[in-house]
Image (cartoon, rainbow, N blue to C red):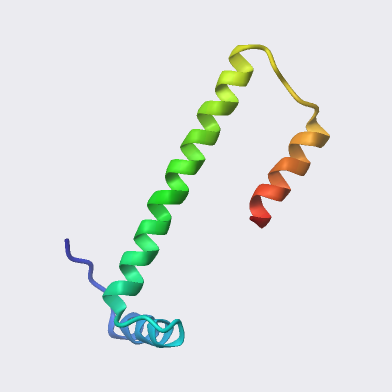
Length: 75
């Protein structure tokens, strides 16, 4: 797989990699992609869980949902 970046973007990525102690930009990008895949899987699982609750008629009040959503964003 190939991804194209501008020279400025490559320089920014290299700076981030150095700051984070990564061996190279490739490792930085691989780690970021793996985090994206993990987050996507967790999000999809949460949506399916919520759908299962709704299918069973189990709902929560809006205030509780807002609190849960805020907590999820902070984690």
